[in-house]
Length: 259
Image (cartoon, rainbow, N blue to C red; front, side, top):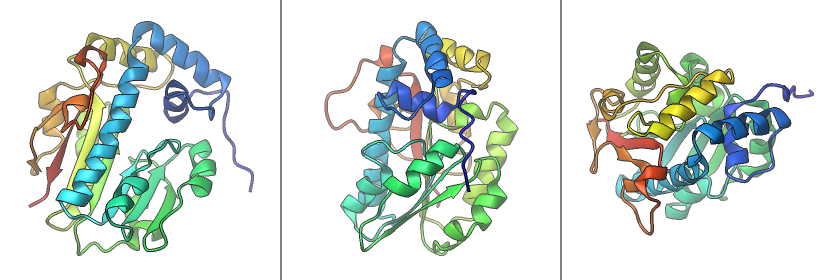
């Protein structure tokens, strides 16, 4: 069945791909990205910092928390390292379900998101807001909900601009998880003027985006235990090497555990 890529309308996943130096994007995405960079020149640096954060978070949840099941929602286009490469590097038996709703991500994910022989990866075409479809899908139901699971919402929650809706999505997902499960988030910070202007540029291009204060980010983890160092710029979350200057980083995040 042919996939409608809707190339004339910019999409956040393809803009992200372009700004990371990828090739899976269209003219509408490149035009939107150019406009966003005018208002937020550091955004490519910030996106790379965010990708590095995903790798550190994944390793922490697998190695330190001992989690072996991962639900990554808002996956975006495959960009090395992908989450399964990180966590299966800790334990090859780890199982990962990727979720996104951009047709071009669907096309590439099925081809590129391959698993170790001992573990598994699968891909679900669904929107973050449609938690029922996600939780009731065959891909997610194949995971063991009696054991801890990690949910990663990386660079996706800024596109849910209504706080009550964000709470509903997170609460619904977390409610199903066993104790010892974890939630990792990164989202646009309101404490960086470039980030604020970049969110306005996204919104002007028909992709509503909302920056959040650190207190608002903490609020997304209601009822969970946030691990050290708490809510911080993503480059400051347990860095393992040289990091970009804070001025360039427009995303804040944290990891929390369900007790």
